[in-house]
Length: 122
Image (cartoon, rainbow, N blue to C red; front, top):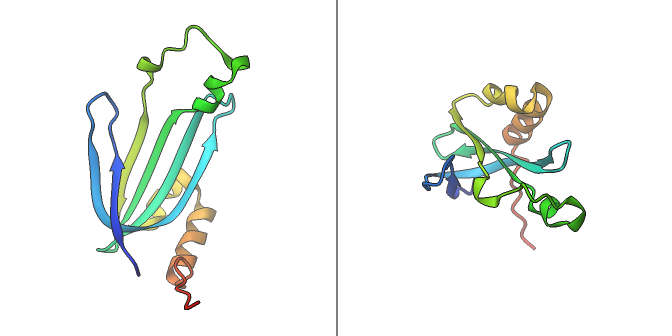
């Protein structure tokens, strides 16, 4: 396994706050809100000590707001708040509430079978 330094922004206000650990990313995906105004990034990491980290961050979809058809004079970038979830667990299944049981089982199977990282000698 190749672990590297992971630094995640967990600031839910104007004061910057970070969590840092040694780990490896197992899963990452972006989801657009129904109205297209927000993006949610969901990630799962495994730490060097074999704990799991779930990180979710919801931000403004700047591509939506920079489009001239989406212009809204009431939108004020300084008032943007980030929704962040940061959880640590010894069991990957704990994160089923965020990602669903089926996806967690797929991640768990790939990780246990060593399919997350393939080192090629090419």
